[in-house]
Length: 530
Image: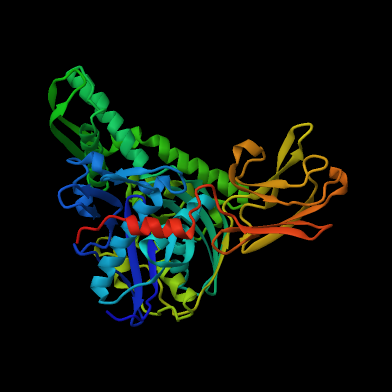
């Protein structure tokens, strides 16, 4: 293999992941070894070979080996917990690293070239912890993450290269586990995000869960007992059937469940067959659909943008293929969304464009044939088509601030420092005093969130300044400076101004891993099945 670095963009998704590159002036969505452009984000351990399956093979094992299979790990990024895989337990970063390794290995085999760098996308509403966890996953996988970029921003970066005309674009991004919405202005190659909102725990998985609940009710009505969902195999069978039905109802008006020998709670088994229509599916999944619409409406109101101000609506994420979603978005905005743009690949292509920018190489001017499958072909203009070198201006998804107050009265509050939707990079500072008299150390707590109430926001981390000479609190003066880089990563410096004592850090969240821990996790990754 050659060593020349190629621009690589990765959409690390909840349900599926995609990797793309730019070679010989073309954008290309790379295929895995099965010839698919999407790789299921599923990991499964095989005890016989002591290997890990990633992708379609792992997904196929979910029913027969549910206890050894991990799905939707993206929903746990940033959480301090572990998941069993063989005889070991692994953090979400390590599980995600296995998915990244699979993408990279298959891409290297296709390109006959080693890959060392990548731009990885995350949901716009991912917090500091989740973004840092994603970056660490890349390190554990053995790649240098040049930049973390938000998924809807990546989609607009790709879309924005097709035209020099000025447009206001709305991105509706519903993936397997997350929902994001963004308003983006595109002018002469400048892609400027105006605002973002969303829910990091709302996506296609919730639709699957509602269909499973419906199945459980139907089976109980037919057989007098519920399926024994305490059995992982039974639960996996129901979820696989629900996913299959959801996908089929994208193109069909009805689908039939055929589940033989379903184990019930009363110890018996049942042969279950039932038809689910698209209309019934729409009814039982109306809740999460309405949640996305409510978030969208509130977001538009807060940003002062009306549906009439939007020139184009872009759908991102595989869950936007559901007819109910497309119809609801069309009704809200009074226009058909851009369905000719492949919602599964546009994020990876936008990430690749950012990889070109990060490596200071020209963004290709030709149109990638992989972006619009024949099944979704249309007459609309090509994406990534005018060869301009774009400029990207992103925003902060959640407000960042500090805990201030008085330890004697025990009255504390959230002091915002950099507001939600402010363009990043961004920086600011605030002067404050110690919480108590005669302190020699001060602990500063950094929070992130969009609530005015301290407790409703997320504690990112805390750090201590000192020692410094004790004084009455009114006589002491500290300055806190916060800088947020283009990836949304927080950097903080605290200074005792009277004595020039300072403590500067890049915020390391509670789960943060040291370099030695990252190397250890990298060394402990189980072998991938070839």
